[in-house]
Figure (cartoon, helix red, strand yellow):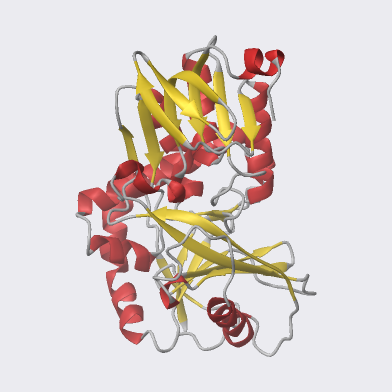
Amino acid sequence: MTYSFWELKNWFTHVDYTIVGSGIVGLHCALRLRERFPQAKILVLERGILPQGASTKNAGFACFGSISEVIDDLKTHSEEEVIQLIQKRWEGLQLLRKNIGDTALDFKPHGGYELFLKEDESLYQECLQKIPFVNDLLKPLFKSDVFAREMDRFDFKGIHEYVVFNPFEAQIDTGNMMQALLQKTAAAGVLILNQMEVKNHYENNHQVQVELEQLSFSTQKLLFTTNGFAGGLTQNAVRPARAQVLITEPISDLDIRGTFHLDRGYYYFRNFENRILLGGGRNLDFEGETTTELETTAKIQNRLDQLLKEVILPGKEVPIAHRWSGIMGIGNSKKPIVERLSEHTYCGVRMGGMGVAIGSLVGKELADLI
């Protein structure tokens, strides 16, 4: 394929900022760059037909960490680091709501619940015991208690009688969110090109040369927002983590509303209208799920089916409408990497499975590095 003079002139000449990745981070970065530099030529390159990683594939949780996740994080991070992480996630959610609007997001503040399987006795006791401590830790941020013990009113099976409720959690429509974000970015005069994979890049003089499949062009600054696909950009500080998901056919008289967590966040489910969306299971095969392949596996899908049949909707035969997977970016720290890699190259990656919450803020912070 050869590009015309017009294509080269309008899309690939005098480019000020090139963003690699059109997900939540990349588009928020583009919007913030447009705010700061109204006349700049901003180009977003996306290797997929749609955003390739997790932005269009996530479960639509507007959350910042269940009680067991917070306790787990406190074992590997300092109290101050955990508070900062939760604050960034919370601020990111507010920025997402401000930028897109609750109507477009289909934002539903039903609250979030953590359930504990009968076999998770020690985790259950630890979480109930530490609710007051975690609430005290987070009170300066939320001005009230975040977590509370409640009786299970949903008639789940195989779980302990108490669940932990969080009134600050909500659910969103992931597809609506990304459509609205793409439309807003395009309306801001940002150029978005799909099926454009960056093969290589190198700096020369005062700019970066970007190599695509059949084209090479120059940009003043290059910003990577590829999260789980960031690979060698950051000395392997980011690893891909696949998340597998399923959604049921519509269920009559479904009385489940909210976002739900199981097993330190490794499993999660919610209602979408009158369906159940359920995902997780990466902990069954950490090695196998450290991949960028967008596939599903029998081992994990069978476990999701089992949880659906035995715990969430016991005694009901519910057909599955669809199964899919997405790629997250994780590392040894939950803190996102927002940094300048060289004179003219930057990255905002490693959302730690919290891209919906933290992605908008990371995009803004990345744009503000320039």
